[in-house]
Image (cartoon, rainbow, N blue to C red; front, side, top):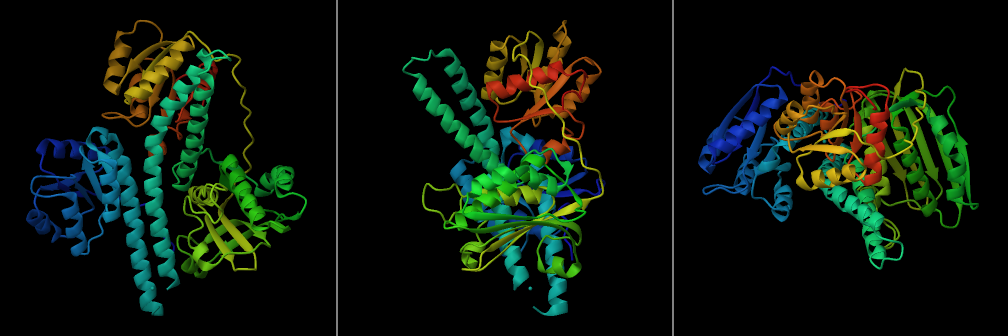
Length: 546
């Protein structure tokens, strides 16, 4: 049975929520935020173990939200009670007091996520994700139960399920860390680069600031790879021919492999098209090739093959998460030393590496895993000690023509004098963005939320040339703000930015409506380049410059 990764819930069906909370005001704020899902919300509020136990007699709760610590109960107690009753509803901590150490402890105890009360804008995306994953777990349990009755034997599938659940948990944690780091790194990188521009070449402080900037850039690279692993990286999918992708990389791959590794390419005839982010797919190939080269230190042979395949019900039944259908397969095979079962079980985990300390980050294959999964595909590994390794990637085929590559012209200047309305709820990020734009010559009107932004628009008599807004904010999202202001300022162009890269970007309509978008962490160069490109675009309004 194929298991879909998307929950099929009718919008009219009520969301049943159990709130473990001792503050009526906080409970009402949470329920109000949940109504942004577009579904009726049916909820109960409890603040003691006995009250929660009485409610859990009815197992039909879709979601449990719990404060971290209360006078007569706690999230730990609520989790323990759910485990003792064998319940598997998504459990999210919503608290104003939980620290990072306590949050990690809670995740280990079984909590699925945590949201701070002063950052409730993160609640809806977290709930949507957990409801989807709950639906997947439920469907998987049903499928496993059916197979057990039919076949009488839950082992290979059980191992795949445990591995998938472990990867989901690690990805969830990695994505949350990466999101928070993006805002911090925006501040560090931007101030570091602005300091460098103010220091003369001979200034004794210049070398120190340069080291800070380099370290922040390495952190940003790690953050980006974590987002790829957790399938939360914003991508721009295009219809491509994998044979063209591989042909374009051929010279570079041969340089990477060196003279002692023979590269053989076996392109499939009449190969189907796939919809992927071209840059991300190039990174997949590069990472697999580098991994293969390291497995053949004394030389060998690397074979890259593409072909059309049909995956049937039998294959899907033996491979967790695979749906039957038409795929394009990319196989990368090396003649290296191979891997044992213990290594195979962990190769896609972030930071896991068999290399000696300092020789690798352990993020290469985890990045490959995330990119393939985000593209709707699957990756499987076949290896034995002494017999080499084969990675097989299956990407869904699409019946569409190859998308032409869009050429982007770099702006002739990164400066300007236009008026920009900046809307960002993080004080530090707003301050650094304001500083970057003003230093580049722009007139900046700033707002910390959508309400302030609407007031600013009413007060400003002159032209506002650009709205630069965060995507996920309290009270009203960036795209919702764009719609509100479109009729009042039809000439105003739009640029969205965000460090939150879960499906909220698509859900809020940023990519679907072709609104220009910049991913945090920002730097002075990346921000001013994107701002200038959007302002210089010929079209205007919400769809400009995408």
